Image 1 (cartoon, rainbow, N blue to C red):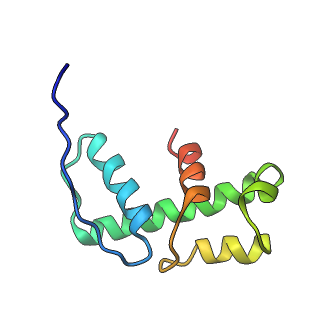
Image 2: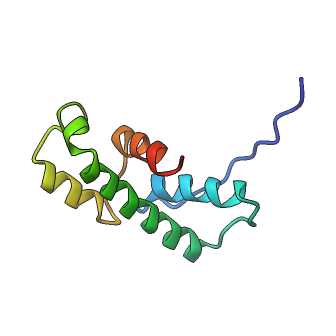
Length: 98
């Protein structure tokens, strides 16, 4: 079995860490060099915006089992760069990154 070419990359815990990590991996898998901190931030914010937009698009199929509060308020918080992401955001990432 081939050896894994994995390595650990630290990321800032600035509230956009989930988006930053996913965006970093996507950027590198597209054949680009590891992004600078400022590019990571830009890529993370773009991904976060796409994820929030996808939630709105899929509101009818996601609101009941993903979000436990007011939909508009929760999606609004997702758009803020200092709000942590979790399972719902990862699932929406899987839709926007296909």
